[in-house]
Amino acid sequence: MIAVSVQELYDLVKSLSKSEKRFFKLTVSAETHAPILSKLFDDLEKSRSFDEAHFQKLLKQKSKSKIAIPSEKELIKLTYDVILKSQRVFYAESIRGHVFKDEISNLRNLFDKAQYKQCRKMLTKLKQDAYAEESFNFILEIISIEKQLLDIENKFGIDTKSLEELITEEQDLIEKAKNSGEYAQVFSQLNYQIRQNMVAKNIKDFEPYDNLLNSVLLNNKDKCLSKKALVIYHHSRALCFSKKRDNVQRQNEFQNMVDLMDKHPFLITEFPKRYLSAINNILSVEIEKCNYATAEKLIESFTKLKSHPAFNTTDLQLKIFTSTSNAQLLIYTDGGKSEKALPIIKYINEQIDLYKEKINKEELLIFYYNFANLYIYSQNFELAEKYVNIILNENDKLLRQDLQCFSRIQNIIVHYELKMFPQLKYILKTSRDFYKDQKYLFKTEKLILDVFEELLETNSAEIVWEKFLKELKSVMKDSYEKMANYYFDFLAYGESKVSGKKIGDLIYSKQITNWKK
Image (cartoon, rainbow, N blue to C red; front, side, top):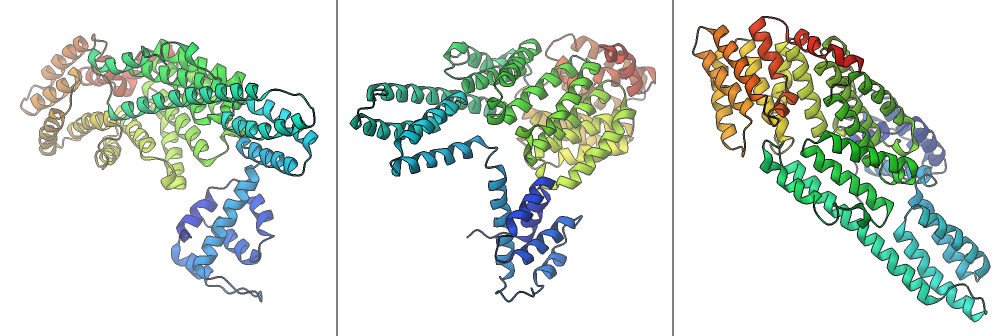
């Protein structure tokens, strides 16, 4: 038996929706220790925060029941198991896999009871439903029963189909399942490659993605033997185009993926995370194109997915929250409306505190990086430093290396603006050492290091900033370098140092027409 801590029980209770909690109450009422389990559940559910000492006292409370009381560890585990049991039953009819398993059990029972006519009738309908949802593994199980049924029917002189036809059908299903697996494997390899590599900085970095796009599986959608395989085909191609910075093809592939899944809703139920990823990427493209009004409307539609039954798990609800909140941050930060983004930061931090460890580290890094940008643009450098330090203190140096690299640039800017020059000198040195280990370096990154080193050695800051802005504008003519300005508006920052205007005001003046798109 796997041990369960009070903290783990508390976390599970807090993850339940209102309807799930109500269903637990129904489930627990049939349990031997119902009053004790229900009371413990209520105490955990009502608590605003976790206090282990408080809950240990609750566990020691004695029940008035004459039934033997479980030990503290047994009580925790029993409550945990009943919650999981209630979850299984609660979702049994909504998760198609459970439905198919139950129906296949019914088929076997009917066959064992020699109810062959009913078995054939149920088998035909179940098989039809399984085909409609491309549940190949379940269809193979159904065919194994059908082979036995066919043998019986032949003995009764009932002619349905031949064994050869079933074998051919079985082989076709195996090919489709194999094909779907091959696409899933390609996607896994691509996903691993993306997570290992930083943002592409030159044409050579595009080669792995060009190779994938030209591969047998991703070069022609006719190789897809099922709709499930086609979803993964579009998803894989979209990610390749994303890395190649081809937003036209990226958006096209993701839109094809959404259209396909909308047309066949079982695909949304089967691949809810892929659907959210596609919607999020379509939204991201609109933000990158600075179509802020369009992006705001997409966020509204995205948020409404919270009520869709396919996304009613805590994990997917969190994905909707992180995606839409980050999108709102980017719209208002990159669109020059920083005053509208500040309340969003407050809301995000409240949600982070509420969900604690349920939000993964990558999502947190994205939040904190965007927070830092917003505070720099708002010229609140003290708060910007707080979030930059969180990113720089990340232990996993392979996690979002792009953000960890650009946060070093943020750190340089923050220390300069706070006039922390002795620390800045050290930061510049360590940053130089850090970039030595990088395979490629943006010209913009090198220019930033050079200009701040020069600023520490000169009394003519105005001349240095004017020179920097001129060189930066020249560098930004390179299409590869424009990607650096996506992570941080270096042009607006340079212009603010030359003109004396606020960064946020300069950004808004550039983006004002984009709010009308």
